[in-house]
Amino acid sequence: MRVALIQMAPSADRSANILQAQRLVSEAVHAEKPDLVVLPEIWSCLGGSTETKRASAEGLPRPSDKGGVLYEALRAMAREHKIWVHGGSIGELATPASSDKLANTSLVFNPDGEECGRYRKIHLFDVVTPNGEGYRESDNYVPGETVEVVDIDGVPTGLAICYDLRFSELFLALRAADVEMIILPAAFTQQTGEAHWDILVRARAIETQAWVVACGTTGWHVDGQGNRRQTYGHSMIVSPWGDVVLQLGSEEGWGVAELDLDEVQQVRQRMQVQANRRLI
Image 1: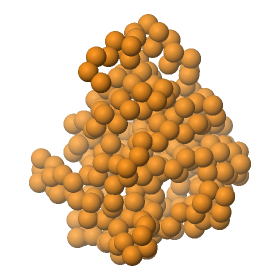
Image 2: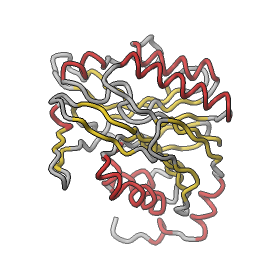
Image 3: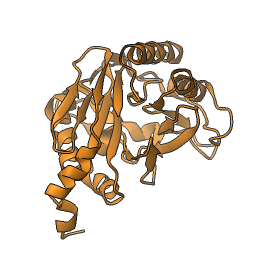
Image 4: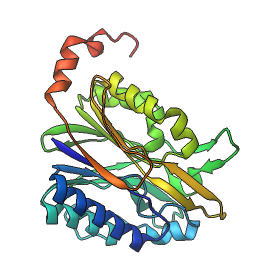
């Protein structure tokens, strides 16, 4: 399977972000003909006020129905290019309709533009980084509650988002579901990315013995309090043995790698970690 990482530098301008995503996906498809493209976390609106985030979000339809601007943009990418599209994540208007919060939601479309998977981020980023910057994702978002696995072109694939990366129990649940690939869109901060991104992505690939496809945002944006924030980029794909087969830098762009899916069973047969597990 050929997989393209679409590393965006989004802002709080939804229309501009859609154009950026369409351009980068088109470039990657025409140059490298991937089977699957993966976008980063919350690429549709990164930064901005609570009101901007809500205005940029949309309710999600039943899979067979017509959706909003973001939903239809992702569906159109899949149909136009005849590819699988993992839509990173977007802001979903949470239910009930009276709620003033959003969900941070991933969508997966097949080459016919049919929705095949949907996942709400479980772990919300409420932290203070060592340099004193505070983040409270729970101020604007509600957590998801369910582990999700989707079939992408015959490959059982686990879904996760950004801060989920720090919670091994989620990845062990995905391993117990026999996933062969895990897709993780992200918007890691510059500071946490420099310290932990590579280590954690490789660790999750090694412990699950699955391909891990991690696609991040990059560049600067402005939050609702007017603070400039930087995200890390360095999107990467890691093999079931922990080898980094693709890593981007800190610039907006894309990259493509070929995934040997037979490697999953080869690694698992040589080192039968799941069979040797004792504590869960």
